[in-house]
Image 1 (cartoon, one colour):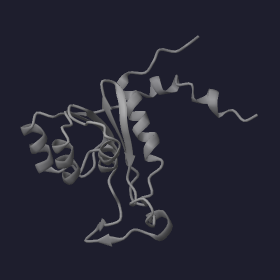
Image 2 (cartoon, rainbow, N blue to C red; image 1 turned 135 degrees about the horizontal axis):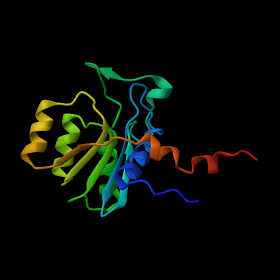
Image 3 (tube, rainbow, N blue to C red; image 1 turned 60 degrees about the horizontal axis):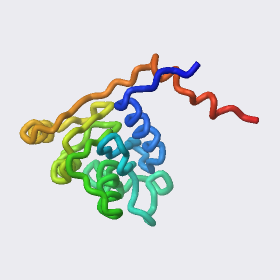
Length: 160
């Protein structure tokens, strides 16, 4: 018997989690999914510029406690839209961790109207003020373990 489908928020957040598994950052794996009209328009994870060294391979390039090599997941998703000509105005983003201040400003400039995140991560007070001022809907998503139990992952993991 087919199980009930998971809600949209969990569906998109699980994809952000899956995308985060491609992260090349040693310190935190972050994934982001940009969505418009219940359609994924881009995804991104935190990692190096294409063609550059990866932190997983050579270590982080830290300056004042921040890795200079890493592009954040949100930025990578927005840049994908730019590269392939996909509008971001009025889209929403699902991201595994609350966006940093720089990503928050970028998301506002890109016209993102909803930010849905899974984990708190050094939430910046000024970022929160900007989001309130611009009336961006911000919501922490909780994954329901009961519903996740019913996903058909096991069907795809069997080894023959």
